[in-house]
Amino acid sequence: MVTSIELQVISRILTTESDAEINELTSFDPSYYSVFREQIDFILDHKQKYGDVPDVFTFQSKFPDVQLVKVKEPITYLRREIKKNKQHILLIETFNKLKDLGSVDVSDAWKFLSLQCDKAFTLDDSQPLDLVKDAKQRSDQVVEYSKQARIPTGFPEIDKLMYGGFSTVEELVLLLARTNTGKSWVCTKFMEAAQSSGFPVLYYSPEMQASYLGTRFDTWRGHFQNSQLHQGKYTEQYEEYIERLQKENVSAYVIEDKDMADGEVSVPAIANLVKKYGIKEVIIDGLSYMVDSKGKRMDTDYMKYKNLCLDLFRMSKQYSCAVIISMQANRETKECKDDKGDPFPNLYNIEGSDHPARICTQAFALRQVFDKHVLDVRLEKSRNANNQKPVLSYAWDVNTGNMQYLPGGDDDTISKVIAPVSVSGVTKHDTASDADMLDDDDEFDDVEF
Image 1 (cartoon, rainbow, N blue to C red):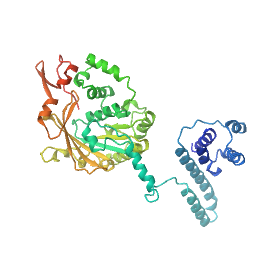
Image 2 (cartoon, rainbow, N blue to C red):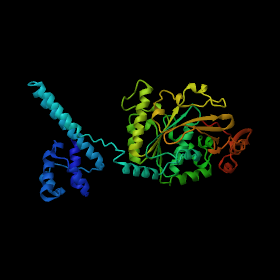
Image 3 (cartoon, rainbow, N blue to C red):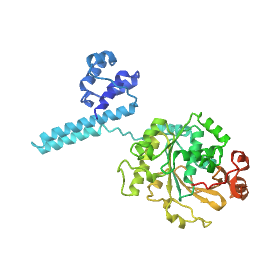
Image 4 (spheres, helix red, strand yellow):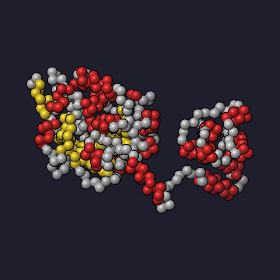
């Protein structure tokens, strides 16, 4: 109900202890109210006569049937919504008046309509920043933005490219790779790094059960052998780690489609969770699975991805959280080769739509060189950096979560990170420093990406 804002504003006026809030909310004259017009007249008259608004007891003695409500919304919300309420009142007034005027003199009807439109335009709450007159304000704002903590990615070299990590001012990051490259593993690394640095995370996992995704979190955090965790084969060290983990204060949430009441995940649903849990990093591991709340199920991925990315970017700015989206690269990637002759996706290879690339603030392409156990990460786009499309290479043992930067493709470093260990005739990969965490009696099982 539109007029519910009237009761919210009145309740806030009568219960707030802030003189600034009272003065701002009582600056709206009675024409902004319809259902509670008599009540706001009483409040404003009392303020004019006695210099202050009535207390709750005085108000309810006069209006015993009005039940005040507890209002937690910010003052900016109340100000915007009471203006919308005025627009609603003007709209009803216009329709009713035009019915009479239109049957008498059409010129009078158009004149009245023009006047009503002018009144409605004055209620526009838009406040563009004037770069000239607001120069001090905007320059100070940049300084404040620069002081906000950035969210580490878990890859120090990537953090350096991004001035310390993901921004919480406004950030929409695109992660692009072909299937089975390791996008979900990298996204889980982002989640683990953020949580361990004190930033609550929300991870949308449409394909993998949350518990299984949790084993990847544990492999990154403690370098436990993921093939064993995936089978529920736990060591004593792992059990102790789980006990310690439960005592940490910062959370990392994983949501699946089945967790939603209607079995579908949309941006408004994500935004509600961000607000509820104070999330600072949102990871969307599969944009194609989300539902566009504007068109429910769009006929084309082109418009669906545009709407989703625009809404996610707005959410990032509204709630001061970084948003990371992983997307599939299309089949044309195989024709997109680098100077070494190996396929490497770029922004032209996004499956379904190029809108995510247009909207995002940063974009990274991933590729794995499986025979060398190397993950390559290339910066495809950056709004705030002189991007020369650097390629960062890492030696990676996916089963133990051991990863090390390769400044120049150092084969010796790769051999140290990916150290073969023979167990029961089967070759597996481990790192000597973490060997005590692994169960050497079990064979190595392939780990999915």
